[in-house]
Structures are given as structure tokens and as C-alpha cells.
Image (tube, rainbow, N blue to C red):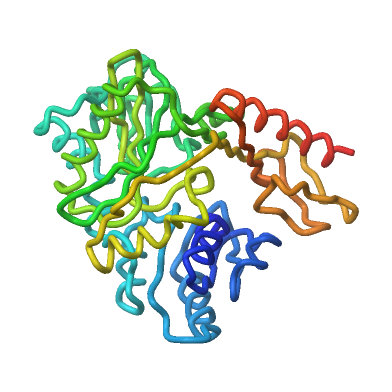
Length: 361
């Protein structure tokens, strides 16, 4: 929904980014050659507004376009990826690939065939048991997950999954069709809202995993990614409980952890583009010297950004002065580096409080 992290990685990789997203934040506009703000975040991407935005950006390009890279917001509407691909090169997974990965009857059947552990899952509400979760097919960010299953539910966009305990751990990977390479692991946490208990809060890396468990998760990703011919950056979300790890989903696109893994020496967007266009995987491992965390700051009350607001250097996705932000909507992103993952997370949480206090004042 926000193109800032992708645009920053593109700049670091030597590309000229042009952005269409729902925020057009101040720092996005600084890093992008051109930026177009889409309306109606609640309804998400729609071709009627996305197509003219992309056409406008293409007209602003100083040279022929290399292609379009899509972040979150398309998994529940892959037909839009197909429409984009008819007009410009799509640097990422094709619509059919995304549809297969996000179809629970296809994805979890493949996990079963490969012997990859996962929570019990069904598209039939009558097969769901007490305490299971209802999820929207292609949903992102955790807002769509609810506890309990209505037996009368007939939506083909819902599926139902056993609720299991564990730490949410994500494996960042890059794939080149017939093979994949895991770049690192992060641990996520939720920022609950009244009607969104599992709303995405933030992430920190590295995840504290024993070496044998890292090898186990890596093996799962390396076996699964070729089954769907995945291309480019993606993430695999697990729940980890001691030595038990269960795969929840694959996100077949650059995701929320880009901020904590990307760097000047090896910009991830370069790896993404080379994997998609040239079937090349990175030849060296990421060198990440410090633990890093990032989190979204959500408004606890409706706010209007003060004209005197000074954004600390550890913030990103900065809204403009005078912008109104509704309760529960994102204000900005906060970042932190520290010696350990626990210290980085603690610093991120402290910085969330600092921003909320500044906005309230």
C-alpha cells in the first residue's frame, strides 16, 4: 500500500523509481522521480484509478520503463496483475502464480504432498472446529483475520484454519523459478485493534532461531518455491514453537520486512529484478551488522499533523503537515538498530510512544 521502501531500495540499486500508492508521503516524494497518490485506501487497488496513475507515471519517466514492481495489495485481486502485464513488463510473479499460491485448496494441498507441516485448513465452514480462525483469501496485514467461524458463511473468499500457538517468524527469500535462496529470518508481532486482533505491528531481525531450525525452515522454502515457479522477493510466514514449525502462507512479492533487510551494499530490489528478469540468485549472503527493527505507528485517536512537527531521522513514511489521520490508521514507520534483536524491538516500541506523544501534543 506504501511504495516508499520499494522506491528507496530502487534508488540504492541505481534505478529511477516512479510510485503509485495510497499515501504519497513526504519522504516517498523525495526519493521518487514522480509519485501519484491513489484514493480510497479502504477499497484497495482498482483498475479504474490504478491504470491512469500508471499511465501518468509512464509519461513522466525520463527513459523507457524497465517494468512494474508490485508490493502488497494485489494478492486478493491478481487479475490486476494480469492487466498491468498487458501494458508493461511485470517484474514479479504473474497473476496465475499469485492466484495459485493464495488459493488455499491449492497451496495447502501442495504442502501436504511435500510433507510440510501446517495448521489444519479448510474452505468449508462446516469442517472448521471450535476456536479456528477465519481468514480472507489473499488478505494481508492481519486485519482480515477473525476468531470463530460462522457456520452460515458461504463466502468463497474465506478459508478456515486451526489456531496454533507459536512465535511468528518470517523467512525472506528470493526465487528464480526453479530454485530459491533464503536471505534471512525475522520475527513479527501484532498491534491489536478492537476489530483486528492480528493487525501487523512490526518486525525485527534476526529472529533468534537455533541453527538446525533455520536449516529446517530453509529446506521448506527451497522445496516449496519451485513447485509454484516463484520469482523474485517473497516471504514465508511460520509459527515456531520450540522445534515445531508450521507454515502459514507464502507472500509472493516484496514485503513489510524490506526496511530491516535492505542496505546500500546489496539493495534487495536489485536482487529481485535480477531473479525475475535474468533468473539470477544472489551469489553472496547478506551482511547485516546490527539487529534492526521496524514498526508501524497507528493513531490511537484522530489526529491532524501539526505544522510544527519535526520528524526524527528514525522515522519513515512521513505524512505532510496538516494531514488528517483517522483513528487506527498508520501515522508513520519507526526504525531502530541495536546490538540484539530484543534491544532493537524495545527501542522501536519506545519510539512509537515518542511519536504518539508528539502527535497528541
